[in-house]
Image 1 (cartoon, one colour):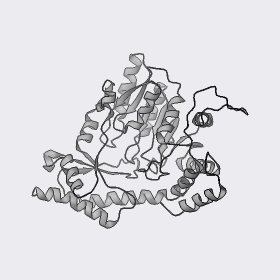
Image 2 (tube, one colour):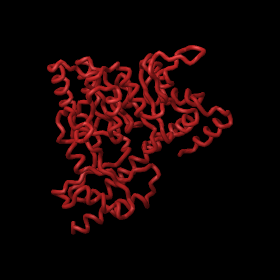
Image 3 (cartoon, one colour):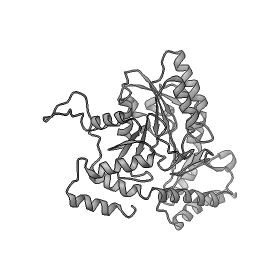
Image 4 (tube, helix red, strand yellow):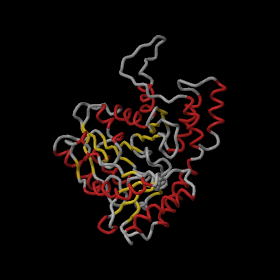
Length: 368
């Protein structure tokens, strides 16, 4: 937590306006939209809820195809299934770990040949780094396919001095407990389309018709954020730049401390923007290092240090075993070799040194 969260929460308690909705939600939406570079925002219960409402806005029919990044968390894809559509996956590029525009072009052209033009492209901005948006947005425009940005991991990042999540039809953000700022649980749907956001708010509030009694003409959802959590979010938003600085400092420390380890490389930072380094991610090439990612992870676990593999690609998940995928080799290698090091904004210099020393010990045990 920063400094203003407790004061804002205390003000909310004093007003006795806890839930549902309220002035803190209204203010959080306004402030977040400004930070995200969009005209409108809807505060919701999770990033997944935001992506679900984005999917719903497309009026998907069963069997419709939606192109998604393969290297991501399943929450980026599950809402496609909520609407009974079919995900199609695209591999990553080496330079950013995000969706490969060349393979996206192949997927879009193939869909056109099959008579299955996708209803949307869901572009994920991974581990604090924006994807290369311009060529992807150009491809989407050329094929008449809406672009939806999953920026849940990239709040505070930039792409050519703009915020990822502000380029597509709509963008999705998350305030889950592990994100760079948090409301303990929550999300935001952002867009320059006022009608899209208005409709999302309607669906998120059980789709209650404007009537003095409870009347419903559409299926709705209980997806709105409480006034109390919005107060936390407003305080967190005020320290976002500090959180980004802290995450980038973590990465810089690790880069300096581990630079001499053979076979260990860091997730590259693309030249078109600034990554938040939400998580510091490395790859470990066993042919060069003499040790693999899992051995390093287990060695850290023995020291009570939690590290995790990078996301298992969606096209390798049992749930999506039958899904079409364009490429896959890059995401598969990143999963096999990738490790996320401890990256919390509140890590101390001693914490960082302990992690780095534990990693170095693995290489020393090999005489490297």
